[in-house]
Length: 74
Image (cartoon, rainbow, N blue to C red; front, side):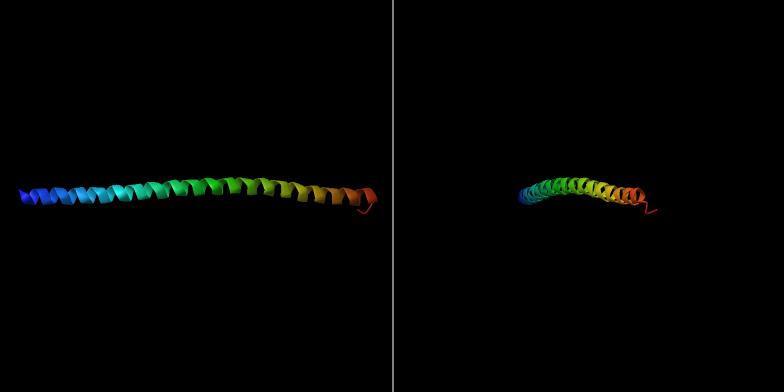
């Protein structure tokens, strides 16, 4: 009978350890989700900036071509 009580105590200890591990994993998951959210926001900003840079470069090229055409350079 004592053997059963020892096994029950052992199982309770294991259960507590597993619950602690689960809490640790939940905490890590929450932190990772926040990090991913932050990275996604930064990527969105980078994408918007890249779009504007591309527009500026294309506008500069178009203006240069128009300048050459108007001066009669071509």
